[in-house]
Length: 202
Image 1 (cartoon, rainbow, N blue to C red):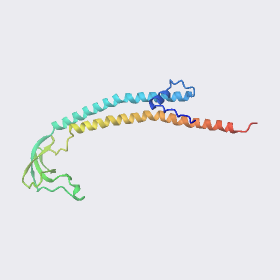
Image 2 (tube, helix red, strand yellow; image 1 turned 180 degrees about the horizontal axis):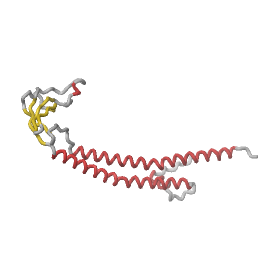
Image 3 (tube, rainbow, N blue to C red; image 1 turned 180 degrees about the vertical axis):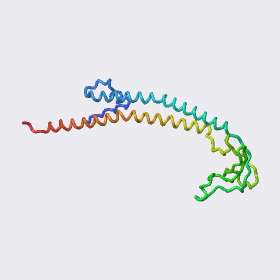
Image 4 (cartoon, one colour; image 1 turned 60 degrees about the horizontal axis):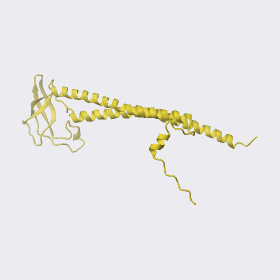
């Protein structure tokens, strides 16, 4: 009569039996030390979650303050087109223009510090002499794009996840190295014992 196979033990129960509190007599002292180390590493990784969240919150607050400062120093001024609008380039040569993905044209605007010119995005089919509105800083120079609140949030979340991943990887590396060294030591011990076992009796 064929012997019935026992049902597989669920993974949570197997992990529980591998804990340092296990009463299994086959579990060596080194196995218990490794189990304690893995348990401590898991606790530290969980403790990193609120730390990473706090770092992300601080990063988001700092980015929001920077964005508000940039926005407070930007004001709108009229600018006169010096040329007709150039369509968005389709060739790599034109991709070196200031606005490589939009229609653009060179404009001029006046500030207390003097006149300025630059290539800015414009509406399609705009002609020379028309007036458009641009954003300039306190020094009168053209300002770049300012991050939105959504972009600040994405950067903060990415920073928090990066801190948690880097810290978790560093913590998990310790028990992994200990396990690798212990496994290699055990294999050498087993090989030595098998050699003595296979030796002919004297």
